[in-house]
Image (cartoon, rainbow, N blue to C red; front, top):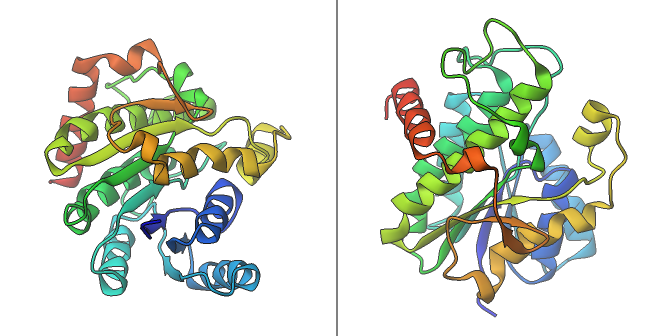
Length: 268
């Protein structure tokens, strides 16, 4: 087995935590990310208790803040000469409209913009390694998304479910864009639907129980380390199989407009 260095955002609970547990068990080095240092370290200690030989590091950042995302990248650089795999797992749902410190709608900031920024800023640490991978945890909810570029961040009429669905559709657009952009660096970029998993987000935001979290971790783990998908990029996976994403997710004009909007927003 070739040991991989893997950063998993939002890995202090739910699918992210279970993904970390499974990857540590398999002998990989995992960077646990949480919103604050204490939570990240508590999670790392909990995983170490069951895997004493596991190699685990911690990083922390509020992913709604561009400044903290930049700091997170610096933390990763200080701990790792390079990384093999980035799993953009962190996600939120907001029942009422909230803005980040940078003035962005929160679903947009955490579910889409953070993966965009992390992917762009961490690529220099990834293109030194063969067969690096970026994995974006989207949702079947993306199929209800339809972007309105006149009000992309819901400043006029906030609809919590639509804002969440749109952010997950944006993540699919990002996946397809980065798959093309990073092909020359041999970085595979794929997205996935983890399923209806009984995470805190599902329980608190959608009042649903869902399936056990171990099922939710299966596809992220598969995409991270399976040799079967070593050369697969620009796909959307469900239950470890590539499946079509929504019809709208393949609209090139909308994807290009979103990328132009995003580049202008972050000035990069």
